[in-house]
Length: 462
RNA sequence: GGCGCGGUGGCAGAGUGGUUAUGCAGCGGACUGCAACUCCGUGUACGCCGGUUCGAUUCCGACCCGCGCCUCCA
Image (cartoon, rainbow, N blue to C red; front, side, top):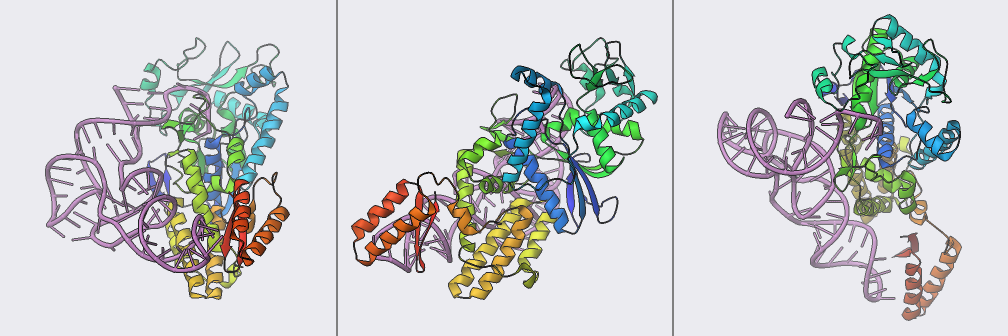
């Protein structure tokens, strides 16, 4: 039985999909006006693991993750760059796909883009107007009338009075209530726009997710996820729009990832304290970054620091060392072990990846034990378990040597290194340890670490 | 001010009403020409104060501290 923490009820609940055996899940993706930072990476990886695990447990998962490719920030950024907005979004979408591929994130089943769903957006707004939940204003905008939805605030636990009383909402003449939000934004002259019954304009921020999710998954679906800062107002508004437009419950389980922090503060665009995925990947192997993300629970907040990444590097290196030089048995040839059962047990509990990783370490310890005992076959069987559990977390799928030797080969190619290792071996044989050490130091200075063992010398990049 | 989350061993990070998390670092040992790497062994922690209980880090209440949302942000 899988249990998932539901932000809507604030409780862990038994997960029962609407349609047995199938999971329909929607996750808010990027607004593509800039490169993804690590916070985006966390959401990407978290829901990637969730998808992998649900499939591992036998569910047929239909995973939709949208791209918001029209919005004020995009238009502003494109304008600053002096380019057409589609050039900017095209570039950022490609960059995003590169980033996620490097992090081992599987493609979603569908990746709808807002600009391809304008008709559905317009239709949904029309439905909201005709049912009295929205109104066109004099300024060309269309607003959602928050007071028409008594349940407004149920996700974020906010009271309408408090929101209205809080002076931070944008009080506009055109709005009936300060908490009302735009479904459609009338175009000023020269702006990118689409025709609509209320004049040319573009969608407001929240409506595209309501339109795309219901179009792709139906009025009601199982899981809706996203980053922590989407809870309000974005997801709250999605609920209002969708439930008023369809008359049905929108989503059963709401899931939110925890924030990435830097020096105890949330990593965010507005604070400017963010690190993009690509700049982090210049310094650390992608799998190390993924390991770092997966090693804490998806809902907890986690501090990003160089030390954390260094530690993740050391730890992942140890895991790969257990696998090094072993050909794992075929996964199908190894039956379910106590480790598999333990893995399922912890992952069933709201996707406890931190617990799952401790299982990985237990299996690695077992491999090492078998090797100590000289039981090659048992070691190969355990290695198969480690690798097949790794699949679910998206870890340990590389050839160990590839993991160890990945990195810049600007200074030295693998062939250079092999040649130097041979020269050192000759020197050692001749008991010329001064020369042997000189070669070792030279390699070390160039970022190559030698690992001597009974079978010979292997190497890896620092 | 409103709403919410969290405080676990040197650090990171799970979990539990009475029994081992795990990892990193440290320490001891094996291995080594010497090292490094690796491997083996090793640590009894749960913010503070009350309460419930035979027994609480785990449940309840108060308090202190940190963080998040309430405004564009994943």
